[in-house]
Length: 78
Image 1 (cartoon, rainbow, N blue to C red):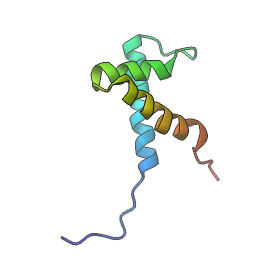
Image 2 (cartoon, rainbow, N blue to C red):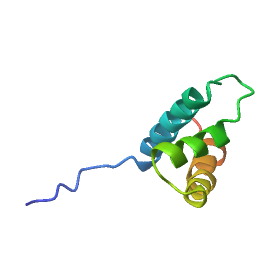
Image 3 (cartoon, helix red, strand yellow):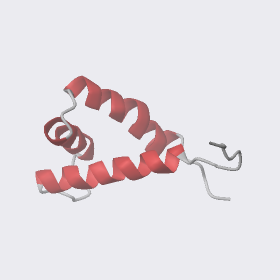
Image 4 (cartoon, helix red, strand yellow):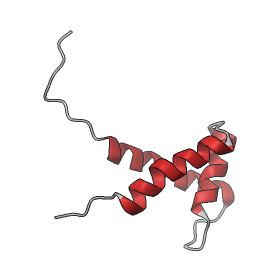
């Protein structure tokens, strides 16, 4: 099997898509999608009850990946 060296992966957009879906499903679970909703805790609860992550795993995912990608490391458009 030949590996194509032209393949380009996009891990950041894929992670952003996954976390935005988890945010949406967490908001639907809690019944609150307003601006004042606690989306971080909604996402953690969703991950705990439906993805079967522990609270520690959910905290790590939110702190390491989601927060950094969404708030700190998002590239600006040129």
